[in-house]
Amino acid sequence: MLTSPRESSGEVTRSRTAGADPVARRARRRALALVLALVALGLIAVASLALGVRDIAPADVWNALVAPDAANQDHRVVLEQRLPRTLVGLAAGVALGLAGTLVQGVTRNPIADPGLLGLNSGASLAVVCAFWLVGVTAPIGYVWFAFLGAAAAALLVFSIGAAQPVRLALVGATVTALITPLITLVLLRDATAFNLYRFWVVGSLTGRGLDTVATLWPFVVVGTILAVVLAHRLNMLALGDDVARALGQRVGTTRAMTGVAVVLLSGTATALAGPIALVGLAVPHAARRLVGTDYRWVMALAALLGPVMLLGADVIGRLVLPHSELEAGVVAALLGAPVLVAVARGRNVAGV
Image 1 (tube, rainbow, N blue to C red):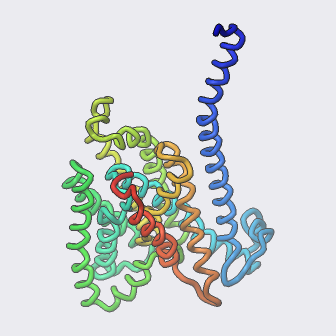
Image 2 (image 1 turned 180 degrees about the horizontal axis):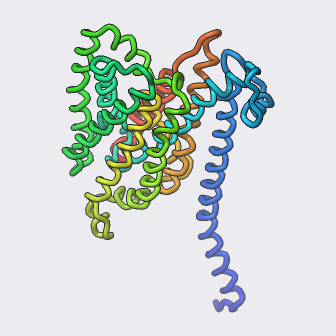
Image 3 (image 1 turned 30 degrees about the horizontal axis):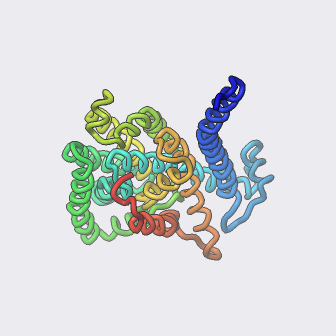
């Protein structure tokens, strides 16, 4: 049966429209996810400034930011206590979200997070040495030790295990196993170091001033830029090393750049907030669930969901106990643990 040109044209148009619809729906869903994450980040930032043992009205928070009054107690609480911890949560959350995405991408391991590479143990050992040998007690002093310790551990792991993703995980676990007894040995010999260390190691946004954020934020910016540059490379790396090389990518260079980005981001986050667990694990999985496996979108969403989770954990920790609070690291671990269990029980645990 012959078909008229008009009917043929209509069929082609419908076929093109049907083919374009899934792409358009995917783009709309991704854009919606980013917008909702941005809104959630704004709301949780306001909650971080307003809620706590002493609740402050949003109008008073705004006045404290735009027209502070030194004699107003609410304004002083916002500016001296809550604004610094909110900015620490924003910076550390962005860093952890991106670092976790990078680690899972370069290792192709769905249960990987920055701690897998020994960064937490390296930072912990450096901080303990700062307490014990140097006598540093101020956050602006020991954050540099934490950053350098995390960087040294990550560089060691990447220099030994960069050839294969499995080797990265194994070397990271080995480094952690070697460092942990050293930390314990120092803490058993020095009670002062133990008392200082136990407050840092639990992971918290308190006790850090604006000077700490001002000192370390450039590392977050540089790490974020590297993560954006690496997003397309990780898409090709996810296809396998051989396919990535066939497409013209230098796999070794990609892994080296990823290592530098992870050092900057994870080292800075650990220096700012201590060894926060499971944020770097949970955030990339949530991002992939919402926007798919394209790392360009996953990176963008992870940069928003990281601070949402960390600041949310901090706010929950302030409200869960009357006249007291739980550290953000404890609450973040409680929130991230179900994600780890779900991923471990899932069918796709072998790859990302």
